[in-house]
Amino acid sequence: MEVQRNFFIFVFLFVSFLLWQKWQNQSFSNDYNNEKSSININFKKKDYLNHIVIKNDVIRLVINMHGGDIEEASLLTYKDKLNSPKPLKLLETRSDFIYQAQSGLIGRDGPDNAENYSRPLYHAKNNFFELKKNQKELRVPIIFTNKNNVIYTKTFILKPDKYDIKIEYNIHNFSKNSLQLRMFNQLKQTIKLPKERDIYSGNFALQTFRGAAYSSTDTKYEKYKFDDISNNQQLHIFTKSGWIAMLQQYFSVAWILEEDVNLNTIYTSYIDHNIAAIGYKSSFFNIPSGSESIITSKIWIGPALQKDMALVAANLDLTVDYGWLWFLSQPLFKLLSMLHSIIGNWGFSIVLITFIMKAITYPLTKAQYISMAKMRKLQPKINEIKNNFSKNKQRMSQEIMNLYKKEKINPLGGCLPVFIQMPIFLSLYYMLIGSVELRHAPFLLWIKDLSDQDPYYVLPVIMGITMFFIQKTSSSHSSDPLQQKIAHFMPVVFTVFFLWFPAGLVLYYIVSNLVTIIQQKIILFNFEKRNN
Image (tube, rainbow, N blue to C red):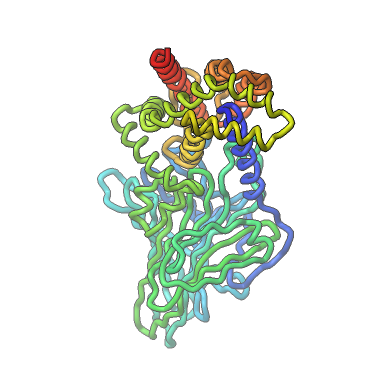
């Protein structure tokens, strides 16, 4: 089996896998199911004046005073698009798209009544709150007093340079009766993205999972598709701890479950024909008359930074989805991050990690080309066997295998390096499209974003040229006309496929090809020298 054919099979399978993955990630809404366990709040223009703004160094929140929900979250250190002056809006509420983080108190005496969807109208002293320099934390209380003289204070707590936000409920029960309450926290999002948010819709190679996910006592990490929610396949899970989240490329929003002595309930629901929701409810608790109680929760709204998320909640870092090769992608990312801390450029870090990978796999590369050289020397004898036993295919195969055994040649020796490179290639691919650190990371000249495709397609063309030289050398060792035709066709196929791949991945392949060309020349020269 020649290496050209192996590469062709590899690319075909890889692209087929990406197309299948894109199809799997699509969400379709066909059913309607509005569970009373979820809180359904429609965006109303008349409510827009009842908002406050809270911000620290990295995030800006817009809170609707009807219920105290987070209706907008802008990440101040991440741009909406490359070279855009606008910060990225992760949470947003508008007429054609909703992505909100909702929270409240439900149950018999909860101000957020789940039966008729009424929400309390909170009040605050100001409409703008900002964490000042040298301030350790910002506490923003909003207050609601019901007709029974129960005071609910909902406090948002932000810290410097942090994406996790603490929400604290302080309940003063001045009524004559005890209160029975339970806390809910949920995320809801419009399933169909508007065009300006669906920036990778035309690129199959940059598609990632978008949907819900959760972690529970029994399950470390589980993704849950929007189409499962819309098709009435709803979650109903009891757990003491964990988290619920909504994921997209590079960014996550997650409510962290407070560990409950009893059990929290994780749920999903489908509302308004096009909105998916995932949330959790705590167990019931009682607040006696004349007493005070404090209930807390925490939410992460920001980039999928693995180290920081691991400190916020167990297994939350798993939302950085590296696919089924996570066990390779994670150590590769750690190595790449270490190189970046020394070099300071992600592109040059990719170049260096390529050299490291090629050095590790050099013994396999050497075995590959020596096997190819030996096969070339045996080609006249193989052709003779084919001519002698052209009418007896079984005998022909037996004689060829006997020749391989006599000369101590493994006919599959040229295949192993290809199959070793496949998981490395795939893990780098997942790492590049899944690590927010590489989003908008520049390299040189026109490459301003290593996680996106080359805007001028220069790198794919260079990659195709380097591959042409590799295949030319390999095909010159084969007398099979079909193999030679495939060798000339392969660089064109690869170039077309790689037009849509992340520039960082194409850069890796270019450097890998250049190193392979040098290794190929050295290995074959030494082999010919020893056998002449």
